[in-house]
Image (cartoon, rainbow, N blue to C red):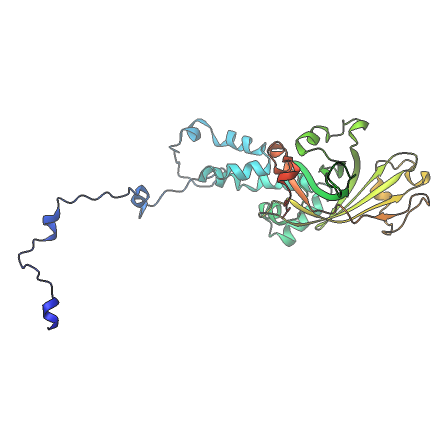
Length: 329
């Protein structure tokens, strides 16, 4: 048996491929392929020096003049500007105007001063206000920084349970302001319940305490006074270490948490500026022998930032049994 015995017999009068026209195939439509080789004319953004008039075909741009659009963007927060820049190219080019980012930077770092901010702009960020906003460490004021902490506490033996334990969950809340002040609260309440009282109008029953902070590079020094028969000052050191995206600034590490005693001469007339009182203190220094300095090692979980518009839907509102493995990241 030879190999030719296995060969296929192909008829010579096979028709051309065109004779198979009766076969129908279903192709997936790909309309974006029609854009290949087509040059789309760029939009002239607000303030452009181009002398050629261009009529935007979009209805919103024909009804809304550039001057009015500029005024709307000037009243938006930087994070709203970032979302608006994703709408279309014209809005993106308009939002790149440095006027918006200059006002945002000067408002955020107003404690530093205008002259010092301009020096930092030229020396570090090549004169770009937008780059300064994205890369320079800053404290966010449009929400709350939350630290979720848990510990295990032994319970009382009841019924058939001989060695019961309880998982205790509590939160540290901090709200910062551009003026250099901040609010602090320790509570077991969820974020959606605490955000209602995190303001300067809170009553004493809400246990919301105010203090001052100072930002130096990526370090935050803060201090507040716990009033009472034995006044105690709480000193907090934080670090703006990272963010989930560029410019997010939504994570802060808690470096140290120290409580110390103060006497009446220290706080007399300085209740609203305890940061200036304890600025030169050592970590283990106290000015009241009845209240020793204590460096706390429990409850040092990093802070997570939650914007005000997300406090109702945040995962930190979930019950304890669904948050056993919560990691701030």
